[in-house]
Amino acid sequence: MPKIRLLPDVLINKIAAGEVIERPASVVKELVENALDAGATAVTVNISEGGLALIEVTDNGCGMTPDDLKLAICRHATSKIEKPEDLFNINSFGFRGEALPSITSVSQCTIKSRISGAASGYLLEISGGELTEESETGCDHGTFIAVRNLFFNTPARRKFLRSPSSEVRRVVEVVESLAVSNPQTEFVVDSDNQRLLDLSFAADKIERAKQLFGISLADKFVRGERSGDGLHLEVYLSKPEICRRSRSRVMILVNNRRIESKALFASLTSAYGEFLTHGTYPQGAVFITIEPSLVDVNVHPAKSEVRFADERIIFHTLYHLVRESLLGGSALPGAFGLGQSRGYGSTTQLDHQGATRQSVRDFFGQSTSAAVQSEESLATIFGKPAADTADHTHSHFEEAVAHVASVPTEETGSPSAAYVTRKALGISGEIRFQQLALMYVVALTADSVFIMDQHAAHERILYEMAMKSLAARTITGQQLLFPVPIHLEPNDFYTFNQEQETFAALGFSLESFGPRQLQLTAAPAILAGKNPEILFRELLDDFGGITGDSQKRFQKKAAAFACRGALMAGDRMDEPGMRALFGGLLAAENPYVCPHGRPTMIRLSKDELDVRFGRI
Ligand SMILES: Nc1ncnc2c1ncn2[C@@H]1O[C@H](COP(=O)(O)OP(=O)(O)OP(=O)(O)O)[C@@H](O)[C@H]1O
Ligand SMILES: [Mg+2]
Image (tube, rainbow, N blue to C red; front, side):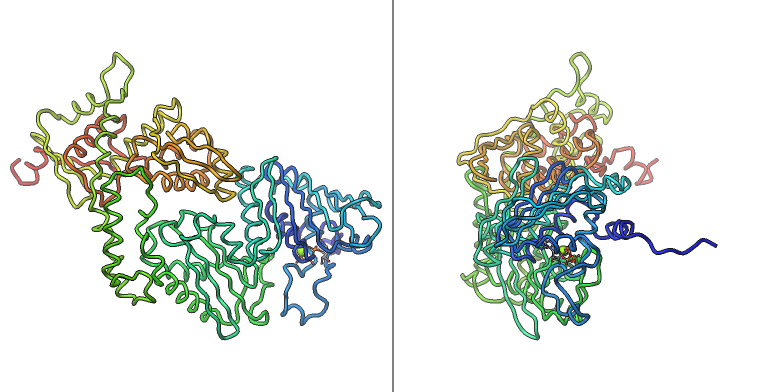
């Protein structure tokens, strides 16, 4: 019979660390929360190698006395709760007294702290949970913690982590989540000597949210507020036109603590309903303030989930608040995602914007800021965006695809891909074109009918171009009439820095002119009908989420470019455009499938018709 024994503290802490400290961002979260609980008005985070090599957090909070400091690294040592009832009235981020012992048990730490008025500070060095040094030290008032070589003694955990760049993203996300609920505190995040976040004092949460989501985009957000039943809800959410592909750009905060809640997220997205196009999500923040006794925050090791006494009322209130905020008029004018084109799109596209606005205005009897509209009326407008968006031709398009068709695809000497494909498909003589349902292009040859999916076909063409251009920079940029200023959020800025070369290869020119401030001066000439800023932001979004080995990443970037740049269902095409699309597709190296594996065209030959009609 094995003997039962009490585990030593070092081992207990290491086990607890497995739950609380999952990755560098968890360390940052715990340390910044401690700084905020200590009343800090300025918090600085500095990381290197995604936080695996080093995480430093400096605050100007109340600091700790030497005795408190030594207690703080012990398990279950906390200044935040005293008695059982306190668990149901928590007003601080921390309360378990677990974070510091967990962190120190899986890293090599230096902590320095000084309370205001003390002549000097105190320093502790801890390695793998063992105190190795303590001494008086000179330091500013507040606390400084350096965490080196995270998981050095738990290699399995270290292996499980993703690339440093995705860890950096998570760190920024964690700090942003804490910053939004602490607007009056200044935050700085540096990663390998690059400043990713720099937030100055903000008057309130909404001002802080504006800083985070970009002051320049503030008019593309809606606000709403509602109180009652011991509950206060406030939302600051993006209008549909700037919704993103990432789910994580929506922060849901309960009593200032960011939480994950599938149910609340679902309530939010269902409130957007038909405003959202498939696969996009809103961005912004939802602040839920509720009496602490009506919510249990002690249900998850990292405190990232909570349990409400009555969930339904919160879902219900959130749903209606979001719905009303979106319908309050301000979300409507640009709701088709075409509101930002500046001097770059074709005139037809601009006319189309006008037409869309007009139709919305007509519907609402001139005033788009009219109060809440009924659900049915909304469905009437948004139920048929495809028909609306169909009203413009892509005059830029023929040139673009004609250009592709003329791109040599084979080494000199061997027959071109277009020749090979034409021969394989037996295409000769005159071809007639017709667009079907603004989605398919029908090409009628002497003995076959080809039906192309216009999006998939264009995607294939652009994909091959992008693959070539990423290797040899063959896509040229077209100078914009008016440069477009673009303010980037920290994570997007980080992605941009990582992907500068990629953007250049794809034909974008961007100049930096201030912190996280860029100027877009040229965009891919072949996509001249697209709004360059939207295209750039969509690609940033896509590139940020790309993982895999370098070849995979290469392909995924080309696929993202193709997908974002390609014609959509609902885009009207004229005859030269359809001809160019067909020619471009035949010239592709693999004309039959799009980068995602869907077919680009199907063929109905005379022989097949003969069989179907029972002639043979
Ligand atoms: N930056 C800081 N400034 C001042 N005091 C701090 C700081 N960090 C930690 N402390 C003190 O150390 C104690 C232990 O911190 P620790 O994070 O381990 O636990 P906690 O915050 O109380 O609870 P939790 O484990 O839920 O975070 C805190 O209760 C607080 O008194
Ligand atoms: Mg804590």
